[in-house]
Image (cartoon, rainbow, N blue to C red; front, side, top):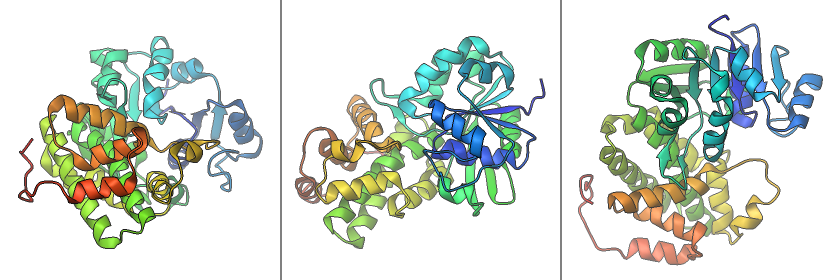
Length: 340
């Protein structure tokens, strides 16, 4: 098997966009689709009927609904399924892969019910010898920008330098620049937690609280991410990079951000249930807020913005009451990174 044969597992907006990046370099890219109608649409008309449907896809992207076949026939598997489904998908394809299979995770989030990072899920399901070789892709990059070939930069993290370099070269194009890092935990937490803070920024904007308040949310939100990351062994400087501050700024300020958009609608008075009804897209921050809040409680970390988002989404807390509680907290020094 050619060691560049690649399958994208997950045909949502981001999976579809990443497939076009690889299709610009490889003779063929397989795109695994959960929905048969998505696979049929891509193979028949070279368009994804559910996600980014206005874009014509390269003819060398071939869709399939055969998960084990995609895993068995490809040396590189790029996981782009929602975080909460990753464990089940990995279990389904475990018997079809070998120790030489290269996994690349491009999803972002924390498993809600177990508070587990994706890297740990890879190790649990694939085994330590294979799971520890997985690589992780994250950074400020919207699917719509990527599929339009607008310039973007991301980071690739992993513990195996040879595999990280291989993935870095695989994804690098004239419009999609890749950097490398060995801080897997830092990259993962930045990519996951920025969605929670983006929800908070969106709620702020939906309430009409202004630009100054949004800037405070982003800055103090980054502080929460830093403290959580340091507690879990990440390097602080990672959060000043693409997968930290870069991704947070993009997701918390752009109208293309699903998480910010959901936050805006909640701030304007819509219920989460009505927002999610009938939507094919998933705002990962909604479930990540659950895992993040449980993790903060377990580690005895004070993460007030995360707690506020969790309360609004899952406990019926009024957004205006959440703002009041945040503003009326006890006063403290700004740089309290090591405080609980």
